[in-house]
Length: 388
View 1 (cartoon, rainbow, N blue to C red):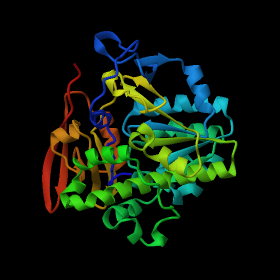
View 2: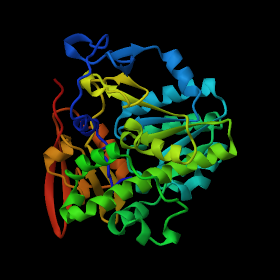
View 3: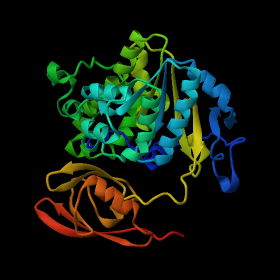
């Protein structure tokens, strides 16, 4: 949910939250200390981290009521992995539904029309307000959407309006009017471990600038968000008790079972599986018991198309930057959250056009941007690194 990223979305930030772990890498280390091999499933055991077979793992996941597939929203590799896992689970459990964090529940009729085949791709993205409600690159998600439509698999809109979570963060759950709660019930209290994780995030979050007294509301907002996405899954399983729901969620809602899984169990959904990806370059020590049922080792292709590294949303004067990814081209250029890109390479800034322009940017070249920051207009040059 852009604009209120209560948990970090980048894989770098996820790794940073694994503060200490003594697990060894028994059987999992690859060349030069890499963690496992791309395409390998790893599990945490008392003896350390070990490979596990895909078939028995996916058989076990297919026996659950819900399986949560975590993602870094801007990782194309994560979305490719999700599609492959989804297809494997569908082959084992044909009565399947797919839940998406990307859509607020008011857009459920649009998802139904897409699955029924009555909307073109362009119509679906427009009517689902993609560039407003999610803003990450639709090309990463479209294979998932097409798989659902090709197989007539129900798609579930799991999210709520960002205004609800923001209101809880400002006022607290009890002060938010019932009409604004979208039918979300009071969330289960977070575990002490979840509060500790949120404490770490809060200490590096802009919300802390409003004062220490905002931390309880910060925690409450996160648990409301988790609860909101758990409810449509539980509701679907009540209507279709033999179904399996596969949920596409940010990793912050999945890891260690603190988020959506915790709320699902409070709602009576006891059998919940969780799967994540793991960057091969990250230390195996971060794969600790309870992180997930298993992790899948990925390594981003060296020839990945260039990315600016921002979450975007349309604005009257161009494109508003919702957030900037740490270490990205955008951060190095000096772009900040709240900036409005007015022009790119001298042309009026539109989201689709800017994405296409960035994708075509040759290595080692510069992209001039005119940016409005407050009342000031400034020139910023995004410098794309040369390929090694």
